[in-house]
Length: 339
Image (cartoon, rainbow, N blue to C red; front, side):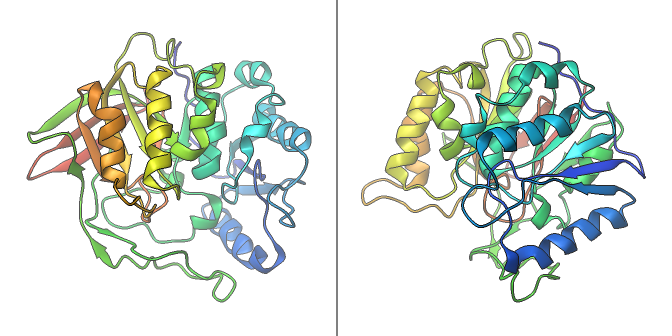
């Protein structure tokens, strides 16, 4: 399967906003407005869809959410789609999304993380269209720490030119900001210190491959289905597989990762990147031990505390991009090339 990249966004291009999973409740609408204005300030037009209701855990019935997302991804006037955030049950979209129509259309950028992994990863695996695992719309107003880039930087970057990111050495130890109290907030509280860690042993890491991955809790239920089949992805190239835990305890994460491995998701992994997490340990098993228990048998480098999960800041990763990961005592870096 050949990886196809949407063309870089240009000033004036239209960006669609829809909620494939959870919508936005009334008290959080001011933050949504701030985020939309941030995109408009970058010179883009924003079109907000109908599926945005935040009354329950879904913005609309599954068929309606899937139809709106499919419409946006097949509309040549819309060049990128970004949700306000993730949610809980985007898996219910799978039977309703028209992957064939999306695959025939001119590629469109799709951005997000968390429950959006349930959409991003199958989209790339089934259609070959690259997707961006990065900030959601509501995170967009935050200033990006030095060393990282924003999703807007990724989707406007010239195709074929590599871009590098390095860990900023700081991260957030607490929960989310109160956007109902301060919808304008733009400064991330990064009160913890730390960089990447190799879990499987010592020694330098320098490995290349195609990037693919997502949130453990939301992609694991797809294991063994066509929606998470990596066997034909990017030919026979090695893969850089990234995973991150949102909130499940270590026992549950361990079971999920074992299931993903047994289903073949890691079969071509040249390395595994593990996102930093605040998910709880279990009484006799830590989150790191859960990863090693499930993925240690792969015999490949496992690099943890990468900024690709639910702990801010966020390091965008492009599903399908060619990546190179370097991790030594003196340097940690990931370079992505859209080719």
